[in-house]
Image (cartoon, rainbow, N blue to C red):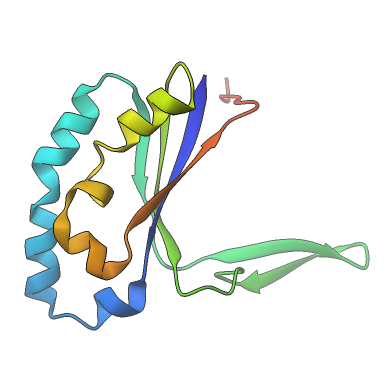
Length: 124
């Protein structure tokens, strides 16, 4: 079974900190990423830029709106796809990710949402 995991953060809190402090926090991620990748169950891991667009159909036409499209203090900063037997195993694998391993992430609102995937198609 495959699970999409979304990594959240409070960008305002991170943006308020000096660049060198954020770089130091991000350096702490490397050993945790190694453990995460070495699980053998990570299919894709991607960091996401803050820019986004939202497409919606209105009055029979596609409308493009600047994102993020959900009003929240949190934004999606990463996404990863994992393979697991069930949600319990998905939680175990996702818990290896630096988002929940790095102490400093707590002050920046780092968190992970795990969602089962009902279908997955790869372009041939």
